[in-house]
Image (cartoon, rainbow, N blue to C red; front, side, top):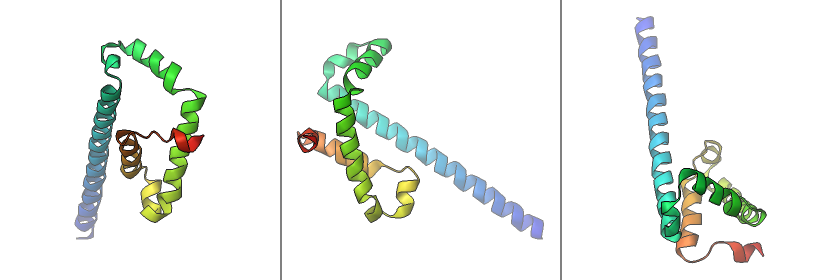
Length: 117
């Protein structure tokens, strides 16, 4: 009897882990689609770029010191609010509330650069 119960628990654990991984993939796909949709909305000329051109564009514009400072400021804001969300959430890499904050700021016409100086 003990082996059957143990096997059931092990199978349930595997199923829950698999469901969690599937949900994480769905969340990632959703996040990528929303973010790239916003990107293409803000920069429609980027749609026609090849993969290599798009990579070059990102490297030369987004991966700059100025962009790094903006991103650091936004992630610092998220880190400051993480304890309010619960300690477990921040450690698991679940960032949708933070992503929504940055996206909402862009949609509202602010990019956080004013706060960065």
